[in-house]
Image (spheres, rainbow, N blue to C red):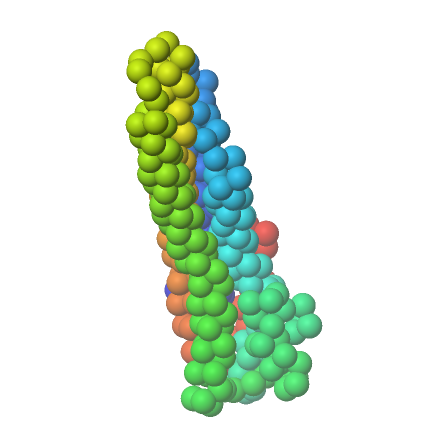
Length: 260
């Protein structure tokens, strides 16, 4: 919330990013412990289908980077407001932006508005709602990408599940046909039977490994999206109250790097 001195309150971007980083470190530690152990399953599971599982991990990495980028964009917008926005005085109320051209992408529409109307601006109700809607729409659009990546991870996991099950069914059918055509029992036939069983096992491995990685990745990305959404909501609430006080307070003190 904006404080009584008219300064834009810090969103606490570093707090959100630290919590996200700590969560990733914990997940990475658990994964490393499994990989380092003699009976770990992650490496073996990943090897069942390198192409699909690599795609799942790639989508997860992109989602993690994008989630951190969402929080950083809020931090850049917050810092721009604290360093560039000033309230007018009682004799000349309104809001003035000293560097509208330096607006980050999240606030580009607001920066364009102040570029067209220099000097303290007193917003009417329509302009006030338009600015809030513009910022809110950009925040919602950024979160839609993360939600799509979460859904994509679940879809890739299910795709691998059905892919593996289809391989299993077709392989089992082939193995049964081979046994039915074999005449008598011999060591060679038994060895061939064991070799044919590898295909169904690989198919089940593909099914379970992709499901494991897809669902685990969606859970990780879901937590990061939750924290990024909390940072965005806090920024929007601060921005809404700050904008509503534009004609009530004097000039705020400039913020420093500790307010980022």
